[in-house]
Image: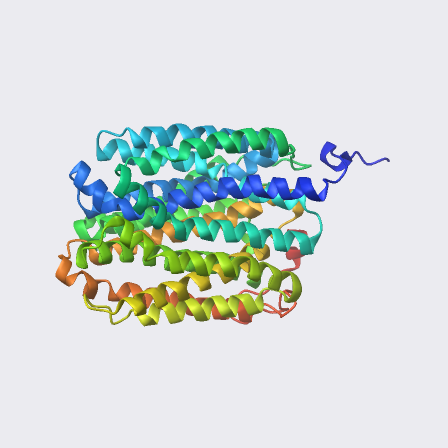
Length: 483
């Protein structure tokens, strides 16, 4: 019997120049997604003044985007594998652009939060799909690892550069300009993707898992909502207790349903692989640390030290520099030696940066602040490539969209958690007490860095998975090879 090849397998490989162009287009879209994850942070005080709202509503302005983005990433990856990655990618650009215009014209905080949620829907069609396009365009493992390093560098740069860009725009044109700026980038990405990005699909598309998608949204949304609203409603109130129960029940139901489905949204058996599980947890930890840093920095510098948005954004430049320089370096290290060394470096630098600020007060020297931000940026730069490469390698190549989506979901869930926790720590604190109230947040940043060390230990220097997990209790099952 003659095997039937998928049309994508019949196409000649892309030239080196075309592969670099595809990578550039995908990096452009990822810069946009990462930028909008953090660019709003530096504008929160200005948005609050403009719309007359407090810290809790401002948290929802950020987390409405990250919560929806995290909830839909895996389904968007599956849709891309089924209907075409370029097609879904372009749909995401259109939705993202339309929602950005709605954010810029929002008359109230409710309208802004709703538009940010729609923006998250569009962004969910960009992040995993861009990574899947890069993975499929570069079949050579070493070239792919280096490309992922560049991709991670752009993403890290956008996350850290958001405050700088936002500060400049707000000082010059007002807070609405941080959304207007998306329009020219969207137009450029649409044209370039049409001209240079080839269409691709998975050889065998999976069925959509609507029950799993709904439960995942409840788990993520419930977790983030409780953290944001907990200080207001009371951690032991009936409403909070009911929310804990809903999240716990949804988590149990999600695991049970996904374990029984032939084509689950997330296969629980994957998490029997210590290295894969470590990569997902590591992605959460890195983005909890990054977003805790960004929010606490924004509020501390603008409220406690009375810096302008632009000055507060410029203070994040060391973070952007560290992420930009170290991410491609990390990608090369992964291609040569595996993920262990970059992960150890990432954990050490993030932990050191957090420890620099555990005694933060309103008179902390500026050089110490800048040093801490630089260390955290270096750590984030070293972390992204090994985490992403490990997650992509943990699934079959035909499911590249879902592979990228799992890591991206972990990142955005971590981002939402970081914003929720940091906002909860300083909600209601006056400028004189804000620095002291933020100290547990810097302890959290250091702890997130330390979490990466056992993740690194679970991997051999060449990137191979250990035979038995050294830090997770599960053993590899016989079914793992069939996953």
